Length: 220
Image 1: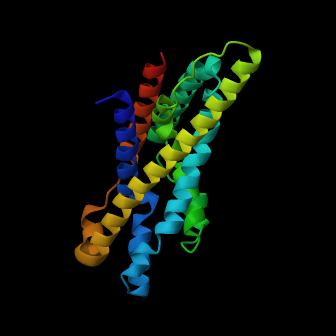
Image 2: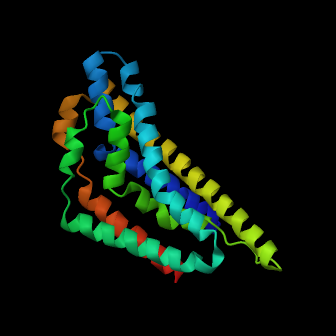
Image 3: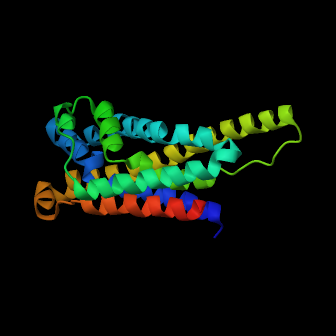
């Protein structure tokens, strides 16, 4: 398997992992189905949850991807991004509590809630090392004007790559999240949640630390 394929596989795997985490919203899909007593209500949460998550991923990835287009700074940017992800993961291990402000956002504002929940948990940051790994440096141009043109094109290409990473990741997140929401709503029932509630906070924080360390190692 090529390094590019491995990076895309990691993006998809992280999407599935985020989707299975209750903090990303699948219990709200179950609650919506139960409240309206119809199957379609579970999947009606797809656009708001997905839209909010996609926005959070894009906000985290785009600035780094654009800057990484300027090849002279790509390595320091990757090192800084890896360090940021690692430190945020360590912080989440020490202080795992959810921000209280998120509890004040009503479930009717699912897209807004999804955006802030993903941002507060560092979901976009977790993708940074893999997204930057997919942003390939361009060959240097032969002159100031040519060089500027190449750098501009590279920055635009990296932004497109970052958006693709965010979209693929969000699609995988929705697949996993809505699949488990449907299973709980249709077959497993609320007793399943009471018996087997998934608390992935510690695993999530440890994943951030590992992702940050991976980013530092790959850039070194």
